[in-house]
Length: 514
View (cartoon, rainbow, N blue to C red):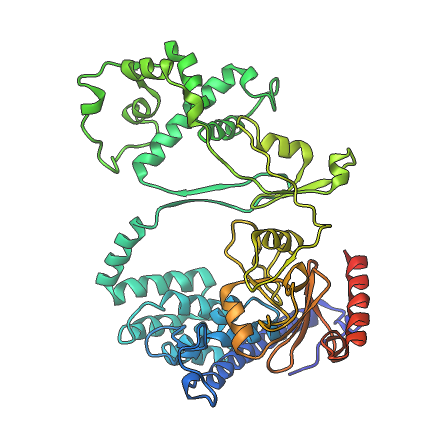
């Protein structure tokens, strides 16, 4: 492989620059191929059954085991080996597992496509997407896709290659595709994107076609009302809002059904009132997915009109009982409450100004829970972590304490608390507390327990890790740090004085970095 060109040695003319660009394509594909080969070799090194290892204890909870990570016909791999590979590659264990699964599929199920990669004739990311898409195909059927993809990989654009692959997957297993269509109908959902830097989120919904039309019509109806009633939009009472802005505000009203019903009641005179042909309790059930188009009068009537009986019931009902119950976890510094400009972090939403936090709890009944002061320390006798320690640990550490993990440790997340210094039933009191607690996921906890990871806690918000094969990392609230052997050796030393000095030094460095 040619050495990387220095910045001051780049070619001066356009012809040589283009030639360099072409050579870099080959060089990138060489590196990507080598990355896949290393992942395949790691899988081969961890393909033996852990039960055959010397000293294996049968029935030990959480012990390592062989699992199938790729499609039919691929070798199994030890489940807990992906954490160390992820640490070496500076990615999460799930990303390392996905890489291994893709390369196993390519080598054992898609050999023609793999041969194209070995010839540096295509991009690895396209082949990996094909591997993932074909993972559920039986081994006897995946060859059809392999032929189709290998014929065009590197010759057509990535989008066209993937489209050909998707068509070949359907052709290879028509019955299986029909089953997937039925399964997709059971995968309807409503989700939220991450909060952007402006405090906005995107609502993502996969719903029945008829429901989507009715939601759209309701949003339009409420948007019409908001356009005529600037007093109902205090955030922009006099602004000349676009239709999209009005619809976005109207969509927010769907989250407050009590207020939405009151709004519709206020304008009931302008809403078409249905003449019910039968009692509302005996009305025929609607089809689950009526085939109606946006703007269809029937759909709009169904979603915005209220029967006379419904109007009478709503006028006498206590609609405040329909208000949603929401629990928010807000993290902020005392100085923000004292008036110093600052930012609050809202779990699951992101950073907010204090006035934005006020807006989050508008239109709802609010219950405030006691503030957790992180200056306090809490330790108990016994192995189990009490809730007070769990809260403090998660508040101090916004992400999992394992190297290169992006998994957050919010109050709603399922996270284990580990004892970095192993709990000793015969040891001193107060072993369980802030001073000896690391938030990690269950699989990471199993890997740390059974595979020989060395972990030492540094203060209350940092952990020094040594993997079974000697990879060294320190994890703190600022992320993962690559450190040399001397630093980790000092932090995990058996000498109490050396260990104490190393921890003081690291806490000093971490506080300056923060």
